[in-house]
Image (cartoon, rainbow, N blue to C red; front, side, top):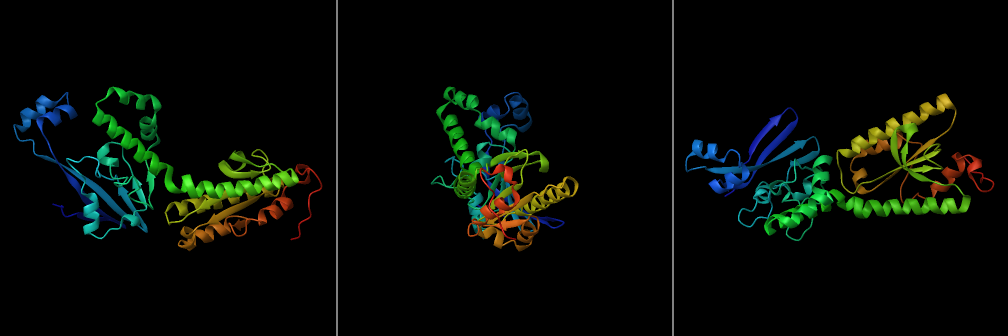
Length: 321
């Protein structure tokens, strides 16, 4: 039986509380959950402890759809989660979820991250969790203690680890992102081999930000490259666009006060940017050059134009314009 969702609205935020199922509270379970207070709970409740509801919060904030936790999924055969059935009944596509916020990594909160085939249940969603929670569950010393636990507990933790690793790593970071980064890096390596101009990745003090590619160095960059490949839309694109504008303004301010011409290149590609034109315009306006996979060959001319000749192993090629 699927419980009707509770609908509410706070300002522009629309929310639904969706049922993920009910657990029968037995004395044995209460004793495991609250060993220090089991006697008091039993005395207060008598023989009937009732049931405990599992609920999931769904929020629509502007054009972003956010799910708080993913429910129990199908990981516990005795009490499978009903979240997916609830979503289906109210015609909420799994593909429409932009963000899943995980409060903590207990099974009834992360069990729905993967489907029965081990694939991400919410294919377009980014997963957000606290670093402290992730570090705790992924700590090798902690995972080693699983050998001392009952098989069912150990299996749950292993499933938890697999679910978190799959989604936190993400299809973008593991596949598309690395693929794009490798293409850009290969192009910069080619330019470095031809002209002797090095490049690096890391924190650039000048803009107080980690830069994807700095040419010729992190300490004295003349060309800074930031990469963003988005296949789907996300509110993080607005954040990224605003950060790029702030970065661009710092470079312009440095030119005014120090006289050194440094340029910012935004590498922007993927259908996700086409769907968010206002953010794409910010990315275009917040840089000196915007390129994509089709125009990647422009990198050579930009580097030859702005990097001082002292960094070249020979005479720097002349670039028109």
